Length: 422
Ligand code: HSE
Image 1 (spheres, protein in one colour):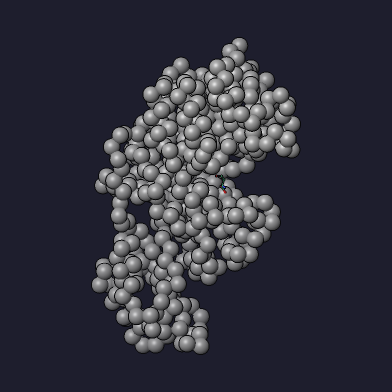
Image 2: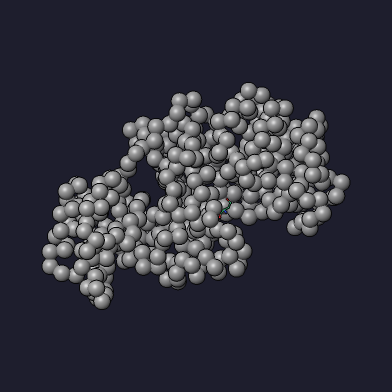
């Protein structure tokens, strides 16, 4: 039986989940895979803290060197979260030839080039399945199972918190603030929800996914990002009338050698597989030229789903004679400055003759074709009504240019939401 000594960096919920999985399922892994893992040291911030799984005290240390400089340890598992010191610890481990298994999308996406280069220079393994969508094996799929494909698009529900909020807004007609408060009370959203609701968490994940999909490094700073804080129950309801369901999507596409990577609220047809992904589940919908369309679905967060990905990476790392690294070319990616999609535009506009003709003429001036339009309800005290337009495929710049020309005394934009999957 091969025995491998490992060290942990961090022991919060995820670390405890990994410890629990190795303790409870380790004997079966030994039988199945012929390898035993021995946890030698665990770096923690606070030695005396109460943990969700009982960990022997003698394993704990608050000195990173006891993990990073321990010559016995050949694999370091990192789940400290955050950028620093996690990124420098991973780099130090790789520099000393240790394999790194990480769940840390922020550190990995923010320091991609540095981390991958150090791993390559030192022949060290780098495994990060848990960094994107928890238990869903999307990294393995991108790196291994879909290698024979030119990937043209990746669309994903890659943040569970926002999917929970939007799913409840959709099913209950509830307001964003009410569902967010409820999610915080239930422990589903963080007390400071910024990383999730403003799309930062999804942007890190999309940077990693699009880098692997298109074989070019897509820096997280190049990912266009809009969160869900501005989404209204009215938009959700209007979308439903057009047969659309609202999701926070990460969308990555390669068209004519240019890459789009964007995170924003997005309508998808209610018949689309992504529309049926409810609660806090994640899903990634991929199109490859040979495989066609496929969807990966599952739990994107939580201690045991994340531990599932981490321990699977650990087993894979242990079995490798030579570690593979992501097939990413050195040339920088060229990002698209504009993109085409269907746009949902909700406006408040004066309810009087000629207004619709004027709005249509602005769209026409920029080559934006209207697919359908509805007028909602009665005019308010100022004589304004809600108008909702659905365009045909149109450039983002064209739609915004047309709307920018509308005199505010006649009409103003309530929301612009992209539509994908049509
Ligand atoms: N906070 C994330 C989510 C999980 O809500 O999906 C960790 O990336």
